[in-house]
Image (cartoon, rainbow, N blue to C red; front, side):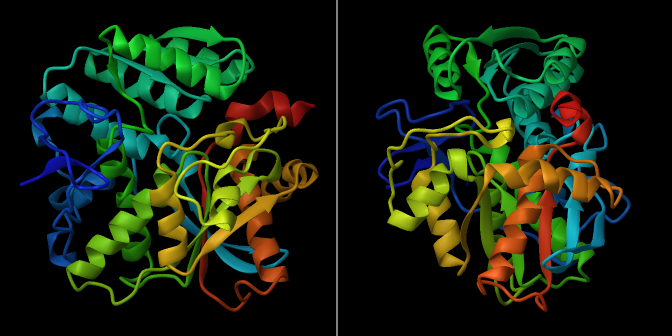
Length: 372
C-alpha cells in the first residue's frame, strides 16, 4: 500500500489525505517504494508518459493529458564527444516540469484540492499554471522579481495569479512557506513527492527509447533535483522488476555561481552547505538550499556518478553551440552540455561511453538573455 513516509522511516501517513511535508516534524516526505514496470505493461498505444501508467500511482480519471512525455532522444556531437540529447524542452509548457506536474495535479484533483500555490524560479510555476488551469484548479505562483518576462507572461496567459517577489530565490520560498501556513495547498515540486512520481518516467523513457537498455551515464542540469531523484527512483524500480541489471551513473551539472549540490556532494553532506551564491544567467537552477540534499547526494554517490560546476562565462556559449545544431534551449539546461565536456576532459567519463544529456527547458523562455 502506497504511503507517505519520512526519510528516517519514523513517520508514515496515508496518501488519501494530501500533505506536502510531515505534519509532526516539518520534514520532507517521500512515497514508499513503487512496484515499478515490466516492458509488457507499457501501453504502446499511448504516446505520452502515461504509457507507463502501470507504474504511476494516481487515479486515471483525474488526468488532464496535454501530450506530456515521450520526448525525442536525438544523437548530437558535442566538443567532448557524441551524446544523445533528451529533449524535455519540448513539453507542453516548455520544460521537463510538465512530467512531474501532470502527475501531481492529477493526484491533487483526485483528492479534492481546488486551489494551489507554488514558489518557483519560473518553469515550475509555468507548468503548474498550465496544468492547474487545464484542470480547473485555482493557481497562485510566487516567482523572483527578476524572472524572465517571457515566463511571467506565460504563467498569466494560463490564468495564474503571479506574485513577483523581491529578493533571492530563498526569499521567494520563505514567502511561499508563510502562505502555506495560511491554508492554501503548497503544490511544491520540491516538497510534494507525487511530482517525483512523474519525473521517474524519464527513466522509463530513456530505457525504452534505448532499446530497453540503459546508457552508461546521464548528465542532468540540477536545481532542486527532482529530475535527478526521478531518474534514481525510476531506474531503481526497473532494476527491482528485473528489467535492467544496473542503474546508469547519474551526474548533476550546476552553475558554479550557485552550485549547492556540487558543494554538498564534495563535502559528502546530508544537509545544505552554507555558501554565498552569486548571480547566474541559469535562473532555472539557481537553488542555493536544497530540500532533499541527502537524497540527491546519495543518488549521485550510489550510482557512481558525481557533480560538476560550470563556469558562468561558458553558459551562453553553450546555448549558442546547441542552437547552431538546431537545439534551442535555455541557459539553465545548456550548461549540462558544458558539464559533459568537463567530465570527459577530466577523465571522469569516457567519450566512448553511451551518455544521455538532459535538455530541460525551451530557449524560447529565455529570449531576453539570448538577445543580450
